[in-house]
Length: 142
Ligand SMILES: [Zn+2]
Image (cartoon, rainbow, N blue to C red; front, side):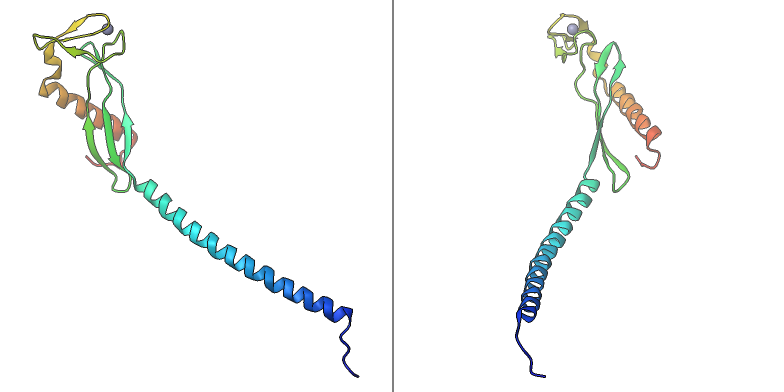
């Protein structure tokens, strides 16, 4: 039986060509998506390991404090604690150093003793912030 190139064969040829063309496009798309997925996974791991921050609000010595604790989630370690500048509890603004080493609020002019920034006071607040953090995340080390 002689082979005849008819419409069915032409249709099958066209279908095979289209399938191959779509396969090439899909393969290229898959490779692009795979590269993009790889880049995003790298970025996600980077974000998971990025240092985290936790701000606290403490009322000590008639002042407001906003200590900032930085930690490494990957190492499960507290990196640093910064106590920061004291704020007036009534006005929520930073107090300024007055001439006699005391502090005063620039808004309401209330004054606070300069001894609130003694090293021992700062040290006790830092320990308090660390203990607050470790109460919620006991897996972290100093
Ligand atoms: Zn004030």
